[in-house]
Length: 83
Ligand SMILES: [Zn+2]
Image (cartoon, rainbow, N blue to C red; front, side, top):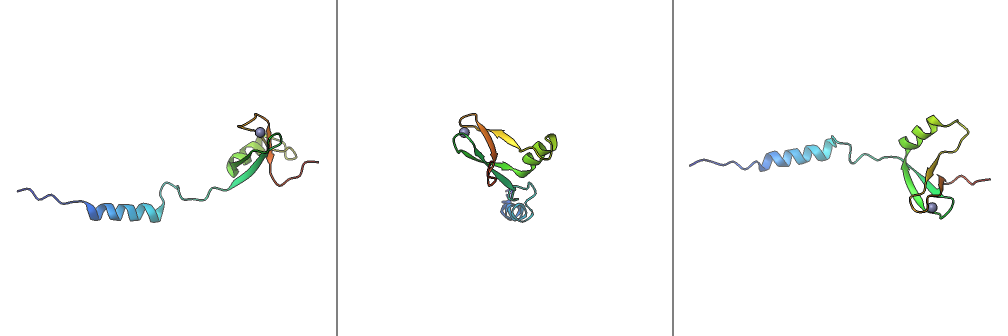
């Protein structure tokens, strides 16, 4: 009779490895910047790297703006009081 070996230990080790090494970066904290809609007050977390990409396109003194998913209005970085 064939002896079937259950690969339980292997799976355990694999899960442990996945948990510890986090090879896909899923548990990595992504820095986000909070944007708020000027029109409706909707808040949205934009990953910092996305904001940086926007900033590269814009001039330094220009504010990064995104479009509100709710009302289509302008979203700007929160915490900066508009003058
Ligand atoms: Zn809005």
